[in-house]
Length: 104
Image (cartoon, rainbow, N blue to C red):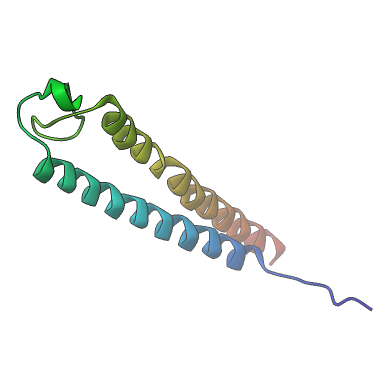
């Protein structure tokens, strides 16, 4: 006979919040490290021979390739799913607390 697996909504909500928070923090740290790397290693003037002709976003006058700019913007877009997990966890937690109040 199989045992039933039961988890409370509050625990599920906290799990979503923790996963989202850890994911957000990890992506944020990686993005800061990537921006620091580009700011340190890339020139402040364009070098067409290497393909570094675009000013990179979120850096202060640093040039790189289109691929570098796409990497920076793509990594920034990875923050939204993590923030969404935190938001869903908060909503579930509020709904669970509200349903517990109506039961009492």
